[in-house]
Each structure stands twice: as C-alpha cells, then as structure tokens.
Image (cartoon, rainbow, N blue to C red; front, side, top):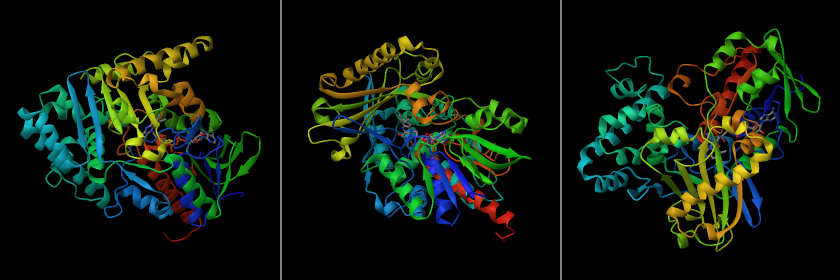
Length: 502
Ligand SMILES: Cc1cc2nc3c(=O)[nH]c(=O)nc-3n(C[C@H](O)[C@H](O)[C@H](O)COP(=O)(O)OP(=O)(O)OC[C@H]3O[C@@H](n4cnc5c(N)ncnc54)[C@H](O)[C@@H]3O)c2cc1C
C-alpha cells in the first residue's frame, strides 16, 4: 500500500482527521484541491485587508480554566497553546426594525436580567426557559458521555420530553411575546433551519455552549487554526498535496482500494476519510456499480442545506463611528422567521435574516489602525442561483449586495460611504471554492430526522469514512471534532484488521 490512509479535503474535518492519524504513527496522505488548507476555515486578501471567510463565533472552546470539548480536541492535537484566542463578552445584539434593540451578554444571569428588564411581563417564563435549556443540555451531555444503559424518562425527564420537539413549540410553550421568542432563538441561522423546523436540542446546545463556554475568535482568524493543524500534521510525518483533488475512489468487492487524483495518478490505500461531500463521493467519485443501493436511498432522504450571500467589507473608519458597537449583530425585518426562511430560497434580498459581524470590537488588530473588517451573511439556498444565466450573474450579484447594504445602512447610517473594499460571494462562489453541492456551508439541512442519533454516519463500503459537515453537522466545533472521531474509528479498524487487541 502507498499509504495506510488517504484523507480527501483539508477543511476542518479533513485536517483534524489527518493530524490525529499522523500523530498516532499512521502513514497518511492529505489531498486538497485548493492551494491552501482550511476549506471554509480560511482567509483572503483584498487591498489592505485580510478577510476572515467563515468563522464568526467559535463554540465549545471554553477558557483554559474551564475547558470545553473543543479545547480538549485541539489540545490533543497540540495546537491550543500556539494560538491566541479572543473571548467575546457578548452573545449578540439583535435589531428588529424600531421594535427591538437588545444586547445579550455571554453570561446566564446577565442575559436573563437583560431579557427580564425588556420583557417584564414574562419575567418568570424567562427564568424557567433558561432553567430548561440548562437542565436539558446537562441531561443530554450526561447521557452521551456516560452512555448510560439505564436512560429512562424518570432519570432524564427534560431530555425525554424535549429531545424531538422543535424549537418553536418550546418557545410557544414558554413565551407569548414574538419579540422575546426571537430574542432567545436568533442563533437559528447558525444551524440553518428556523425555529419551527429546528430541533430544540440544537438550539438549546448552541445557547448553553455560548453562555457557559463563551464565543471565541482567534488572532489570525480561522486560517491560523488551519495552518497550525496542518503544521502539526507535517511535523508528525504526514504528507500533503495541494492543487491535487481526488477524482475517483477505487472500490473492489465492497472495500476501498485506492484513490485516483485529478492528475491521473493512482494511489493505493485501504482507508479513506472523505472531507468532500457524501453526494460527490457517491455520485461522482465511486463507479455506480460499487455504490450500495441502500446508501443512495439514505442519501436521497436528506436535503442540501443553505449556502449564503456573503459580503466581505473593509471600512475606512473605526466601527463605533457608524454605530457598530458589538461583534455580532443580527438584523431582522420582522419576527416571522418562517418568512425569513422562505427568503432563503429567493434570489433577491428583502425579508432576510442578516448577520453583521465586526471582528474589530473583540480584536482591534484584525485590520489596519483606523479601519474595520465587517462580514455580512444572508443565508441563501444555492438552487435558485444555479439557474442564473452567466450574462446576468454579475448584475444580479451587485443588485442583491445593494439590497443587503440598504438594510445595513438603515441600522448603521453612514456605513456605505465608508466602504473601502468589498467582495461579494454568492452560493456559486462558495460552490466554486468549497466544491460543496449548492455551495452548502453546513452540509445537509439539519432536521431532527437527520441527527446522528438516528443515522450513524457509517458508510457501507469497507474502509470508507467521512469527516466534516456532511458526516453529521456543519459549523466549526462539530466539523473539527468529527475528524478526530473518524480517525478513531479508522484506527480501531486498522487494529482489528491487524489482529491487535483494542
Ligand atoms: C460564509 C460562512 C459563514 C460561516 N459562519 C460560521 C460560524 O460563524 N460558525 C460556525 O461554526 N460555522 C460557520 N460556517 C460553517 C463552517 O465554516 C463549515 O460548516 C465548516 O468549516 C465546514 O468544514 P468541513 O470540515 O465540512 O470542510 P469544508 O470547509 O467544506 O472543506 C472541505 C475541503 O475539501 C476540499 N475538497 C472537496 N472535494 C475535494 C476533492 N475531490 N479532492 C480534494 N479536496 C477536496 C475542499 O477544497 C475544501 O478545502 C460558515 C461558513 C461560511 C462559508
């Protein structure tokens, strides 16, 4: 065999998978189509700005004295202490027309107090809701970490009552004011489904994780994290090839035997971890006769998640000058998030749910003195963009960017005239750079039925594993940890094959 394991794709999941394997002495080759590591976790330069592509608020890290699961994962890889982490004080500022302007601290008691001051009629409901979120998450973590064989409704009442409920049902049970419901569920965009479609467990874990372990960014942005993991991989004897995509996965008798690169080279291996999407792997990379029908059926049961219109902007002023005082700002045209979700399917931008991140508030060094870096994200499904004729594409892109800027201008007057650099990415751009179907940024839509609880991401072809958003859940924390999980599974398999006791 040329290599014990070939990892396809150097996004978060591919990088942590490759690094974990190399650190355990496994001969590993990492193939990446692009010329830099990271996938979404990267940056690019325009003028005097280096723009962060994807990371807004890192979850699961936690401070050194109270480490979260992601800090453990990154510590094991040896990268935590090499990086300078930036803790954010606040969760977010939410602006809904002239009806609501609220900023929540990344602290349970402080967040509750702010909400109670703004919504005094629902004071007790607010406390009860946060109590539920905490109880639910602690039960969920206990069940999963202890693999409790006697998990009963008596022992874990909140988990059994709410695990399969959607967020909206829980909000309706606890609250009456639609503004309050929105104020505690605005993080839905971080998983891609609105409250009426999002599993409550996803919303509860997001809120719990950011409140308990705080949101983070890091100096040098997500590119620094990707580079640090790659460096550890190389120091451990791993090999990487950039500008070298995998075009075929070879399978014989239901078992992986190798990879063909886009340059036509065949590399033999018994194990592959794919950070490329399951859709590409099963519909393009493996010959149809080797793809189990059951696998295709499973694939057909999931839907491709959203991409986004993303505006990367360098301003020639400090953020405070135009009223941006928080790192994370959500702008909503109404409290109707079903409407906002419908807008994700439309090309133009009217009722959209908009995220405006200004990194300088937490990290003043992210752009040159006297400037600021802003990233604006509107979730959009890629499907409608695929039908745009090339001659209309640029005009449409400018038009949609203009609509988004109009909205931002309403909340932050003067924004437009301070734009020094702007780059607009559409679902087509994300598709081009990530290679994901529809430019999806979180993998499949994250419905409750798609949860790993019901469909563990084990492939039916022997030796084939997945890491990254398509293996479970999108977002930094899940994809980074999915790589180490896949590496563990491969190691077990290698040892089993070699007859080593495990
Ligand atoms: C604009 C934007 C904003 C976001 N905001 C946040 C946020 O605030 N918080 C958060 O947690 N998440 C956020 N995300 C989502 C998060 O970044 C992604 O879910 C996550 O980084 C995906 O990681 P992944 O491991 O699935 O790999 P990806 O990032 O999808 O990378 C896959 C890699 O595989 C490579 N590849 C694909 N096919 C092949 C092939 N055939 N051969 C070789 N290489 C191949 C690609 O080039 C790419 O480098 C955002 C994403 C975007 C784009």
